Image (cartoon, rainbow, N blue to C red; front, side):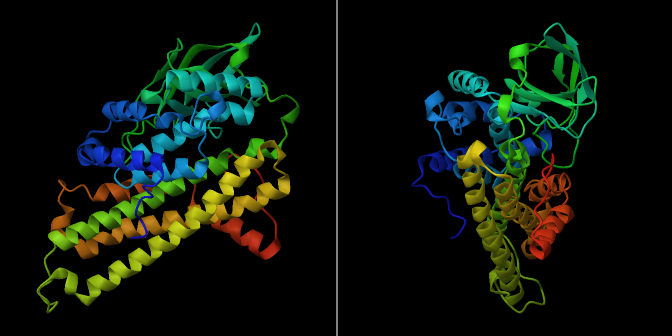
Length: 392
């Protein structure tokens, strides 16, 4: 089947084993919310938290295409864990994107050695965290919303506004005095991501922790964080769609009863059921193909690094935006429509099939499909690529 895991890849084989462990209590954890402590322990034991750190610095040196296929695997059973793993890896790379090569090397080495889990406090759209100079360092006060992973983090990628309204970035340990994750995330989906509020009360940031881009401050490569964010989410969408479809298939084969007017003895023999599954599989297959193209684009961007030109940046933005938009729409369709062919009994809370839709619905609203599709349409009509921004 097209959604089968490539078990010849040792990292994906590990991810598949973890996926099965995560699946055991995925429904119960979704209901409970809070912190996935045991799942974090398993992740740390697996070594996958070091997956994208270059080998030079003690990591596994794997490309984004491998990282994001791991995200897919986890999202097949638990979109929250897929999201957390993807954002961990993106946050881990912040110093490489925004700081000096020396800062990146130091943080990669320390992260690999200490097996840190990273969280994102870098939401640049929020204007709620402010910093003031104190000596050569900074003191921060305020808060940050949408701080994915903060409730279980060892280290943080953060941004704030200086006194002139400019954004400043840094990395700090999660045990820094004055910083606190409220663990107040209360959305309908992604319930274990800890994507709520982090507060800052006189939090000290030392000079060496502040990103120092130096001569390459204006390089196009420093604007590709949205590529990482869109790629993580599109693979959460895709994994959720694949997982929902496979879960529904299993239920239909084993549990579903034929409708009284269907004229068949087995639900799977109903032509309507066959057509719906055929349509949903085809859509998911197409989304998978687009997602794989986007993986290749992101790998190329990362390989180019600071040699990436503005023209190339615009070129590679298109397949990532297209894949994100299509994966989100496909996942919404699949995770909703499976109920039509699993039947009324499948809505019982004990099955938790609704978590797939709730997770996808929650995340597709964070970066609306409409604007990514417009960007693709503008490029197709005029050749004008999306302008770099915090979300494009």
